[in-house]
Image: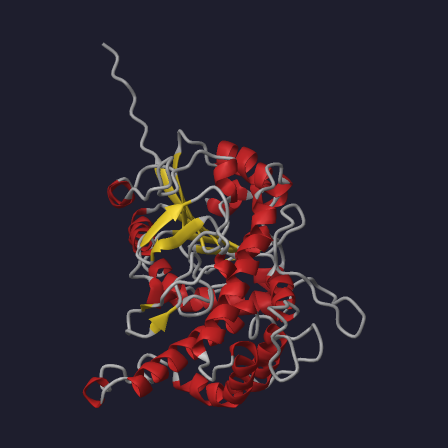
Length: 418
């Protein structure tokens, strides 16, 4: 009697960031374009200091960080749409807490202390913009209370972001995603050889249109928390930072997946509290920099738990287009003791109207610096590291491909991932 051969699959965990869709074949929404659109977004003719709300906040933040805001070339790694969202979250938390503090009895004032959970660096900026917000609030709704206006601007920004992403997400013949699915997942990472655990920090669910990977929800849009926790050997695609198709209006702690993007600008929902008890505006996506404060919500906590488990158990970790800017994600990535492959897209920036001699600038060195800190990896000298399309740490465990996701990466995958 012939014994049946048992094949033990390898497990790969793939993490995608904003740079995943930055190459031409994907034609995705980029950070710079989203930032520019928020700067020019009109919201009920509201102006702050004579400017559109987004432009006003952008300029104030640039000044706060010592940057010049008059040109589109301002560094989006410092001030971008997420920075704007983050400041609105901080401003809302402070102003709504202060309103509660001023309105409550003396015996309740300790519990409603307005500085609870608010970062000191933004208190100064909050004072700078307060007068302009107060004037705008009085002009718009004849009241001097600021936080409702902050909430409305915030919701309109989130609404614009989600609907902007929906246009790209609905493309069922995206060349980049088709190649990623048909070449990389089907051929390089065959189902018979790999358990494919994919996590994204983006807000889309493009992949579900091309692969029937489990996304945490059933056909009726209900979360299946038990399967997320127990089945870590299925092919999956989880949105760590939320999804444009999630609806939080049922309950801040109970999310449903819908077929269409909700009209987030037209709905008003009471705030909830983050881990530090600071007020938060419910949202289907975690933008800004208060991501950890929303991790208590379902399904964020479910996916975060699964991600941690997969990092520890995986034979290989692949990051695509992730800039290593989220500390809570980096902390989990650092738990891996196996091979790490970082796939990023570094574009040459023109200098004085002339292209640089080589297409790798300070970005590639910054990324290598992050990899060194997270994985305690030591890299060889610059010439050795940059003489081809990818480089590796001295012990060979951490590899960096700098030409972005696409056919060339797939063709070199066997060499890179060995």
